[in-house]
Length: 417
Image 1 (cartoon, helix red, strand yellow):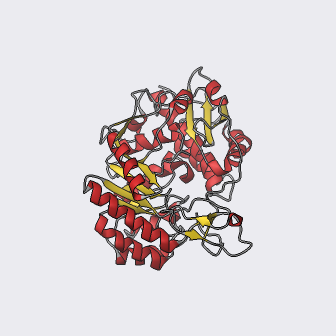
Image 2 (cartoon, helix red, strand yellow):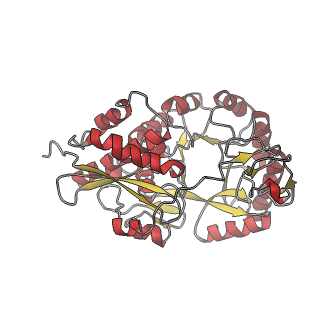
Image 3 (cartoon, rainbow, N blue to C red):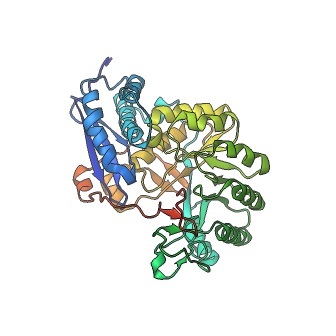
């Protein structure tokens, strides 16, 4: 029986096969071909995560026993004295996922077996339907239904965001419907302008159209992206009750903890929150007081599988389900870890999925398979996803100034993205 497995190296691979900057950690051992992979993607700050992995965690981890998963997670979190935050957590999360992958490979088992075994065969997923008009949105929904999707997140004109962006171009077309123009004050800065009043009205029109067209045949979801104040969010959630949403995501800014109690008291619309949370101190009060219905953390942002599985177990006791963040800036490795946790979690709700294209599957052989509305793992030991480093090198990451997160109200003031 193996007692120890020393970490021989920690490497970082940066790649962007689908245009999103991904960060992958590879933990090697002295045994040829025995390694673990983890995702630490913080797309907007990928260089910082890369540097933290190479310059801080690698020296800390070399030679330590890779099988001591809990010990190493605590070491990585506490060793810097100050702790938390998305840069640190994504680096820690990448290593943590790789450690779990490695441990499952040593055991010769799929990762879900180490988490308690399956309670379901596959994970129901949702994808995003977009369109500049309700009719265009309807067409996108039809396309997703043809692929077996039973859960769809509606985003009129790309969601709560406005589209572009330049006040000097003579007014900015609002993305949520396209009819109105926002005219910021002279000298206003470029940004993703939006008008809360128009956003709410046009989104309600879109839900009316989709529910009238498809009836109750679909589970509908929507993401506010924190762009409403508390009174606006309460009114919006109450109006949405008649459309029977699966959940309404991030209706309030992540800092507005007390607002969730008032929101819960005024609406029966199910609430999902915590996409931007990085610590238990943030999500735990919302779960404990049953102020939300779905946990939405980005698993690597939380610090990896170790804290995520603890969050899932805690949430189960309070009747809160999981719906882990799974956008395009979650690699197939990260999606696979989400999937294995979903398979073993009794209180799993639904999984967000950005489908993998041929380039992503070239870089990440063994990526989970989507079929008829569900995501399935393969039967390989570990989380089942490998990394082709030669293919990864064909798709280098590109640093850029992020524009979509420069959200602005009509007067030009910055707002939460």
